[in-house]
Image 1 (tube, rainbow, N blue to C red):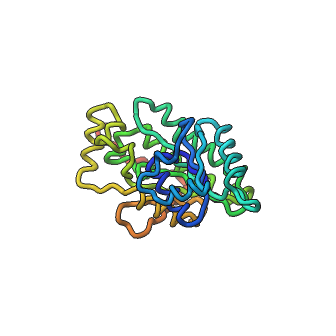
Image 2: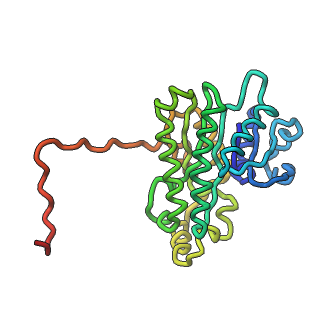
Length: 273
């Protein structure tokens, strides 16, 4: 498994579960030199993985397709078994901060798109790309209305999942594409009462007010629920909420058919002639 943005709390929690279950993990992030021992925290299984060299780290800037490809090469050379290459890519790298909206699109959208393409290229039959979206990628109401760039990027991730996760691409590459859309997770992105999200005081107040009285997902809870949907249907997007026993798939819908015959009368607009 490769996890981009792997040094964040969510990525480390996912890696901890995978190592516990006997898997191998390559953590990637934008830092050049990393001592993984400094990031273990409460994830005791990561320590075992580091000692056994079943969890490794390499730098990867997801805005560079070449660096994502290099991560696959690194993983296949240093972690993969002789008869088995990388089988899972977690597109977990993501940022917030509306002032730098162009960078949000670079990391959150372009990085995921590159990851999917490299997953198709390097993974074989049975591989899966998991895109980390958000509940903010399913609505534009409430706190979502106060983070336009971030919310747009997460909606785009769901669209990438649903389009690349179709028979057209599966028949070519035999790799599934799914998405996990978690609620707020207790990570560094949400520290300091969401101060990183927006420097606009009114927008930030909307975010904070919408969250009052609500509970965040712990990284461990969110990670377990993600791992439990790794075998999900191609193209599916899974909403992950706190204390929910199982994630559930977010259904798509079919647009109504175009009517034949005379066009219906336009509704009358009062005050206009």
